[in-house]
Image (cartoon, rainbow, N blue to C red; front, side, top):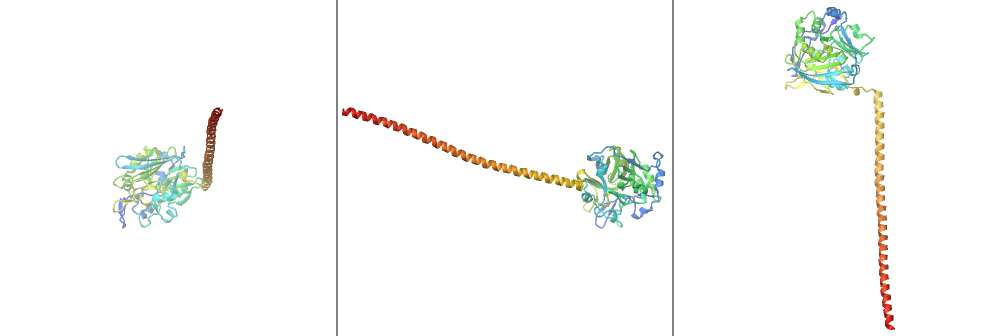
Length: 409
């Protein structure tokens, strides 16, 4: 076993390619070829750690609480520290490592974090593991990668790992190849970073620097990588088993944080074990497929261009983890509801039409009856008047006849 990422930092902070893009490189090697010059073994890592840890070169945390909630906040601390913080409270269901669909480490394929997040249905996503950031070999993944229980790649070179096993146990630290490939409780997701920065709630930077040092490199180079201010992506877990995903914006050697500051920041969040992931221009924080942080590489006009990366950390909401059975159930439920709504709409519409129809008929017959009643009353009144007039005429006629009879006599 050899040690992964012992670190030069030829932090050539910025490189301008032929396309005019200025790349913020925070890479722990002077070149990809140096990747294989590492001679530290897992046994060395075990033997050089503090005695209080015995032979155990990693820590495990079993989630004590589970919640559907995802806490998402932004923070501003000091002058150069602006970042984003997500807390995942059901890691077994919500946390994963992902790569671009149809590509990834197997073919050195890369994509932006937002594109890979969209492809995999991620609610929140950040960049993840290290990869070769320039030609030749751009996109070559470094370290151990396990995605959805599939071993994408392992390496005889190791560094600080972060993963989750089948039973939900979260593992942080240095792993032998046998531990990586163990099938008794296999890893579902695993990613490798540079530097185990917090162990058991305490800073583990000094121990990590001692363990992750190549024989051909000086500790000064590793010190430089740890101490330089830059954009950082951090992955940790607290005592409850909640995963903390943190990014801090920056520009190498200009703004951002170093790993000493990163330790203090994570400790303020209650993180007990954490590693440092790829940073610099790779640092990206995505929410609902939208980049919300200020990171990436810049073009000639100063516009930031999201960097293509090999792997991402993906946080899914329960609503995005719908099985075919759930989809069928939801489809049946929705179709049934649609039919119910349509049926009720038809019934209500017919009721309204019938109401209008019968009301119209009612008004029509009411008017006819009223007209009939009114006409009959007029007829009776006229007959009464005629009868009265006739009686008066008859009375006057009889009176005149009586007068005429009296005269004749």
